[in-house]
Length: 345
Ligand code: SAM
Image 1 (cartoon, rainbow, N blue to C red):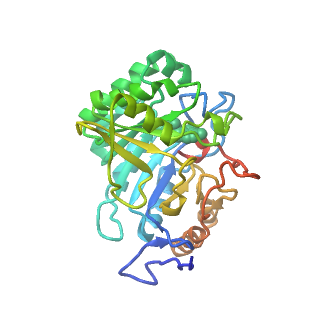
Image 2: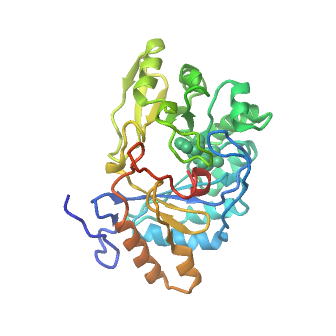
């Protein structure tokens, strides 16, 4: 494929977009605001480590995010660790809500959370300008859920958080479930019913080799085809057309049109060719892929006194080097140095 050069505002004022060397438009920034978490999900964390990386001050995140937005980012997803643990989150969202994208639209602001603190925080988050939340929930059966999170009482907290967030208008509310064979793959049909009963979009995510421990194997991944086949036996699924080329989830509704589920299949049906994402870790490193072997120290440059123009040029150069794809399951695959909780999922 011919290499497209990155486009900046300086080069072309009418079309400020970040384009990598594979021709992909990068418009989606994920920002980890902490790598601390109040859950110890068995497939994510060993439970032995706490936070491992520093956190930037809120005004430092803001300065860096503004640079990304001025270069063409249209959507920011705040994540972690658990983002609701982060002091100053509401103020950060308030400031982000005043930003405009290069096409003059309001910045789209979303957040991924385990939902534990959502019942208290949903209304302030909405009031600050947050558009939507995605809640991670790996079982609809309370004992299974709490075996996974290793936090007693967490199921009712999260369920209540989901309901309160919906009532606060943080919709459409998505519920993400990572499926692991032998842990929670018996929850698939229950989740399909949950999507309909609770009026939430349930998305099943294939397990990726990004855990702190060494749990991942190809056999533990529950692939897209199996999920579709299992739900269809009970409730026939109807595929929905993608809304945009970089959409990661294959979406389905049910034959009566009530409810939606999606399947994100980075392992069995990788979507790297349409990837629109870049990540900023809690300590200000750019990661151009979840599976990057290198990190790009944006914060280090900022602390060294570089100007906005210098930092922007660095972002453009970094994104130009974005990897073509991941190599999960291939011989010689290397896990990245950080696990999901420390990158920002
Ligand atoms: N604490 C927040 C939460 O629970 O949503 C945000 C951070 S968490 C790391 C983000 C998402 O990554 C969660 O939905 C979690 O299930 C998912 N995740 C963690 N490890 C994963 C893995 N190895 N493969 C796929 N998804 C993973």
